[in-house]
Structure formats: C-alpha cells, structure tokens
Image (cartoon, rainbow, N blue to C red):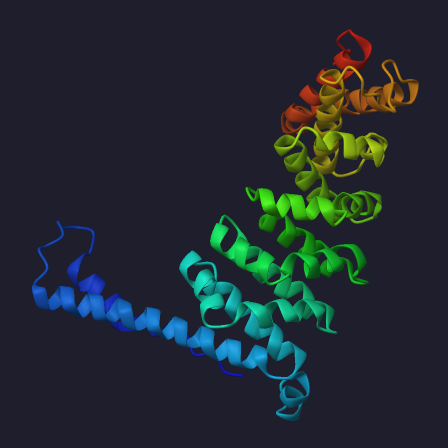
Length: 317
C-alpha cells in the first residue's frame, strides 16, 4: 500500500526565494498571496482526501482486505500514517467528520495485538487536549472498548496503550472521569499496579495521582481498594519514576485522611512496615553519587514529607 504524502517542493522553493534569513521580508504582491493561499489549501484538501481514503480501508471487512493481499503490517503502516495526520487538532476532528472515528475504534477489537495497540495510540493523540474529540469518542462508546483492553487484553503492550488513551480521554473531562469511575476503572488501576510491567505501573500511578487531585473524595475509593499498601510496596521499585509516583500518591492519601476526621486508614501512624521501607530508601539515597543524588531530589523531598507525616520528626537524610 503506497503512501502518497503531500509534495511540498514548490512551497519550499517559494518560501526560500522570498526569505533567506539575511534580509527583511519583502511585501508580497497580490499574485504571490493568492498563490500561497491556494498552495496551502491544496495541501489541506490532500490531507482530508487521504483521511477519507484511510477511512475507506478501515471500513472494509477484514476478509475483503485479505483477499486483496492486505496484511496486518499494511494496516499498522496505515495507522502510523493516520497518527501523523491527526497530530493536528483540526485533522483529528475531521477524522470523525469523514466517518473515520468509528472504524478506528473498531480496530481496538482487532485480533492482531499490534493493531489494537496502534489504534489505541491514535485515539490517544486524537483526544489529547481536545474536548470535541473526547466527546465524540465517548459518544461512540470508545471508553468502554479502551477499558476492556486496559483490563483484559492478553497483550501487555496493548493494555498499556489503552491506558494511555484512557488517560488522555478523561483528562480535564468530568463526564469522562465519572464514566471511568462507574465502570470500575479504579479496579483496573489496581491490577495495573499489581503487574510486573514498570511502564504499565508508571502510567497507572500518573493517572491515579491526577484523579485523586481532581476529586479528593476518590481517595476513599483508593483506600478501600488497598492502593495505600500497593504504593507502599512500589516505594521500593527499581524504577525511579515509579518510586517517586508511589511516594506522591501515598502522601496524597495520607493528606486526605487528615482532612476527614471520621475516615480511617489501613496504614496507621508509626506503622513499622512503612517505617522500614522508608528507612531502606533513605539509606539507598544516602549511598548515591552526587550526580544520582541530584536526580533524586524530588524523591528525597517526598520521603522527608512522608516520614514527618507518620513519625512527627525529620528523617536523617
């Protein structure tokens, strides 16, 4: 499947002939302005036309594609191209206008794990900081498909990409957050933290922290599901980003407990197990080189804050 990208040669030559960086930009004639406007419009039309062509392929039944020797790799290449196009927010919204969003979401159920993963990543780009496309994806039941892949896909890469798409879909989107909560999304995050994939854990922790910041009452859900103990365990992770995110999350849950006089926490003040974990990390930081110590500045501060919260005295750092 050949990819015919836009030909920018004429536009580039025109640009260089009018501005070489060594002299002031000259006044453009009406003819030049008209040519430039037409050139830009033709390129935009070409992209929209290509979106329609990609949409036609995505709408074609798999058996028909196979009969025409279209392979899973061809579809992955097509999704890579689509990903480039929808990095523009206008093109991301245009994809739905030309009928391409629904078949793209259909690829989340494809039998090929790489296609499921790539389609989720395209969805992530489409909805990122884009309320219009967020709404379109939710209306097309895209969140349900992403949640299914996030929690149940047999391929870890596909699960991770689905989580990334969910994170972008519900960020700054209260209806999306509510739908995530109702669909037991927090249970999915718990399973992610229990996995052996550092990348999966990192993405789950980042989304969890965002959700707890947005809705302080969700800390109750996190406590009930045992997130405090999971994060306590992840403080000892080999990955610095996971350690830092776990510390930040545990500190957030601790602060939330303080603001609620009737709420309990499964980690009590002075907890010996937590104290040992924190002490081990403090020792690990004390043995770091100056270069590594600089990189661990945030982790060191979080350890200090958490220690003071639980033991009412500063740690030896």
